[in-house]
Image (cartoon, rainbow, N blue to C red; front, top):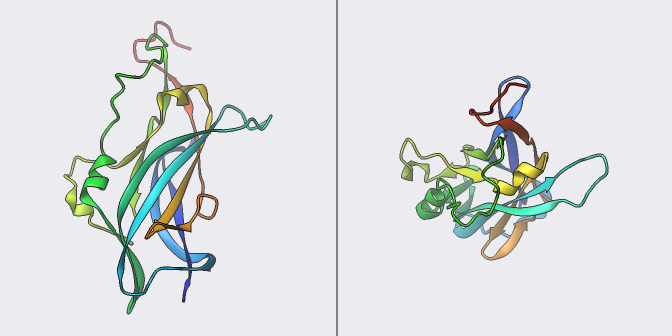
Length: 192
């Protein structure tokens, strides 16, 4: 039996200074313990994403947790050739491309500031299949809540569940660190 799976979260960055704008997902088989996945059989799988928002790192405040999205599908552990294939459920994949309805959000729209990134584009490594279900203009993303404007740091975590049992918990997979930047809206009345 191989080692348990671990999910890699590699940053996708843009510009200088480097700004994280997305995350690239992939798997590694060097997690602690042994996997419960049967060999050469597709089993139901879920990737659940969460974020911890923090206003400061100096005084170590308790982070605020937020859900960032979920991707369902099936996972197959192949033995010949060795590999992992996560086949995305088309409906779940499409749901990651949708922007949540903000009509119920009670945040102050009069603020002259916005924040970036407001979402993280999701890119998929070679272990992912079923991505052709999306149109060219559809981009899967993890959308941050509007309350993220009150924070400066985001940690992105992911949990893998196979057949309803946790294969890799949030603390066992990679963590992606993201700096949240305040940006003035284009109609800001004066320059800084």
